[in-house]
Length: 296
Image (cartoon, rainbow, N blue to C red):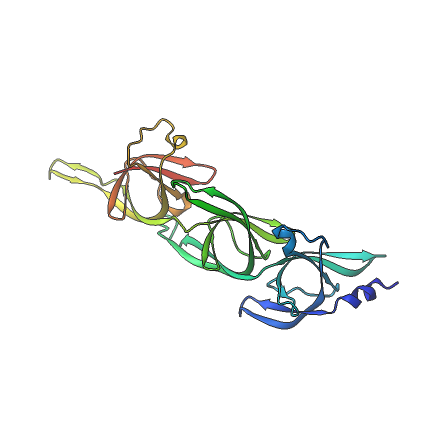
């Protein structure tokens, strides 16, 4: 029996393929078949989105890894593709499909200045892809009362350039990426519906020229100003760690690679017209962040 001829009898669907450069669908890009992975009609989200793809061994997947069934109009992202063989002959290929209906864009903020003065974060797009969201859970947001954040799984093509602290614009809403990983040849992310909390502040670093000149009776601050980006948060009991915290004290958190100097307790920062003295500095070696204890 010629297994290739048997498989080819059912692989007759001519798929549309998505061109991520032009953001247009192109016809006649690939021939194959789509079948359910399990005939059981599941009530769960992911099972309703997954399908199996049958392809001839000579098939070439599009660079976008995104195809569309012209009969139903359903778009799919292609995941892991494996070959089936018999008697040392590769007669068919089977792939993982995940139904995706939304074109979403990934944005990343990063400094563009030199290492010693990176400057404020600048947003840029890392790509536009078909994606799919699945609700994972909801939790009460920190620093709020009776306000909840929704947590989701995000499914993307394997080549999607996406990582922690990226933001995804999906159907007019913004989602922060908390983690990304590969699963079944697809890029999966844990995301939370949240706008970017990071703001631009002026960081005042105390320099060598600060001090009092007795001959002129002049006090020089010696402060050198830098524009940096980070976010503010309040203190919790776990954050105090023996430090005296006053009402109105806040933390300013900044990634170590986003500031060109090492903060110290003699420095200051200004945001929204308010100047803060830095009382203490802690380093988070796991997340590579500086935690600045700020007081008005």
